[in-house]
Image (cartoon, rainbow, N blue to C red; front, side, top):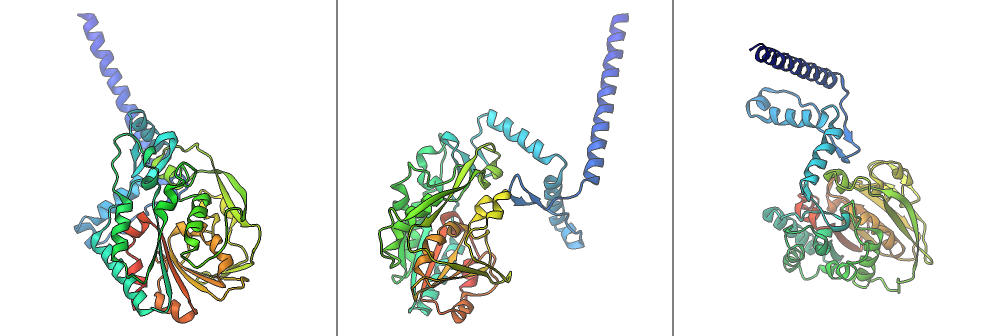
Amino acid sequence: MRNRKNSRKLHRQADCILGILFLVCFSLLTIINILKKDQSISEEENRALAEKPTITADSLLNGIYMEQYEDYVSDQFAGRNFWRRLYLAWKKAGGSRKENGVFLGKDGQLMEDITAADKEALQKTIDSINAFALRHSDIRTYMLLIPDSAAILTSQLPPHASIINQPEQFSLIKNKMEPAIVWIDAVSALQKHKTEKIYYKTDHHWTSLGAYYSFINAAKSLGIDGDFTQAYDIYPITENFNGVLSSTSGFCQDEQETIYVYLPKENSVSVVAHYVEEQNKRTSLYDTSKLKTKDQYALFLGGNFPLIDIKTSAAEDRKLLLVKDSFANSFIPFLVPFYQEIVVVDPRYYAGTLEEVMNLYEITDMLYLYSGNTFLSDHNISGVLEN
């Protein structure tokens, strides 16, 4: 009887101690989160973090404020990176091979899931491109859509992974384009080299090798002549690149990759890149200061900007308007020797219209260069194409 009473007493004491420990831990976490300074950027995830929302009567009544506040608490929680790594490690140990839309494939190859097209928005984009081409029928117009890694490296997808057929999506887009728009097939060109490192393992971008193969394939269509098979010296710029897919998914965060640049052995030209809205000029297409940041792919052009005017010393009279996403940043160095000027517009950041650009620059050629996922999900393209 006495033993039973002692046992109950010990249980009550243990429960009391656990309760006190819980309250202490909860109080400490609360105090730490109150005192903790909010961060605007997550270096580990390579993205902007939610800021504390402003409360209004409308946002409170329609529930938006609570949704924003939940995002804010989740993003700014003390020790978030530690808890996130722990959670991802637990999921991976349980056999998970997909996190935040990123597949963990064979040999540690990370691949972003293929985006399903918003049919209405995509049709609006296509209609806008066609209308712009008809308004500027004197301009040579080209379309180069780059397949994402999951569409090419299908043999490296994890077992039972199901993805949308992106090349099929491309074919549907091609069939809706005006005949005057020259379609450049990047799918076939990259499939020929799918056993080579044409995409980074930890990032969604293609490598400089992938951009190089696509340039060789596109050159003739773009009216560029020459044999480029031995035309470049190749230099490693960094060997500790860990890309955005690793940050997004939490997979392969110890993986270190090399970023290469291709420099022409001959026909090298000088450049002056004018970052128009930033009122900044550079005499290089590479910003090595970005190698000290998490986003080392921003080495190319320094990242994404609304409008860049690149003037070259090339003995050409062609002026290219390049409408693009970030895949184009590592492709532009291959184009530079063949254009007197390249005007680069990223519709995600540019607030003007392409009609304004056409009026300001004497454009002779126009190239749309996008990754498939961005093109299928970007609602900004039609906006900059409006008359």
